[in-house]
Image (tube, rainbow, N blue to C red; front, side):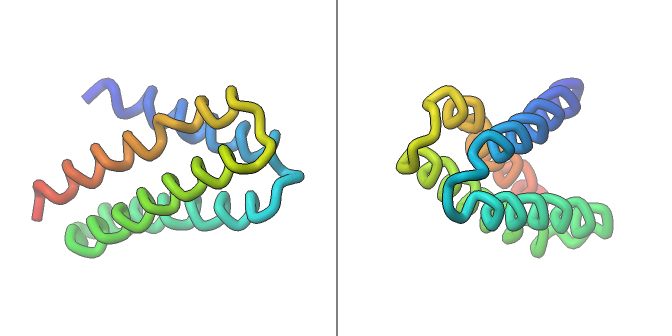
Length: 103
């Protein structure tokens, strides 16, 4: 579908920009590294049609994204940065549902 390209472009840019503007907060780089590693891992698993593993990796990635947004909201990060990243967990829930439908 046409929406996937622009949405993933926005989410990737938002993740990078929010992380770059939140570098002084603790654990930001750890969350960023784990999220990017999970997203790249999902691409590899999905490419090789490992649907069960890719589904569970998306579940873990969704949990990490929700935890990251909560962490940023509890730190002294501007609300605009937290709001910019809010679509990520919602999009990952949708991706998990679509991926789970293929099981």
